[in-house]
Amino acid sequence: MTTITLKHPITADGREVAELTLRRPKVRDLERMDKVAGEMAKAVTLVADLAEISPDQVREIDAEDFTAVAERLGGFLGGGLPASGKPSATSR
Image (cartoon, rainbow, N blue to C red; front, top):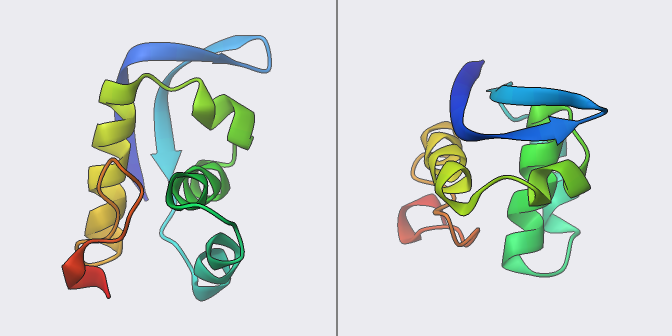
């Protein structure tokens, strides 16, 4: 697990969320992500699953914070997802 402090907190379920805790992804998370159309939508799906928040709540994350989240995901995935949501060349 890894925790990311948001520079720009979001509101989720009526409460302010200033940090996200992401669990390590499992193959089933990657399979679920793979079924979603669109590279950014894949990233949103994976973040939602790993942080246990809704995709709509992920969409409220500031772009700067999402970049930090994507970088952490890249660490889980061996280079994985840049902020665009597209897998990098090293993760293929």
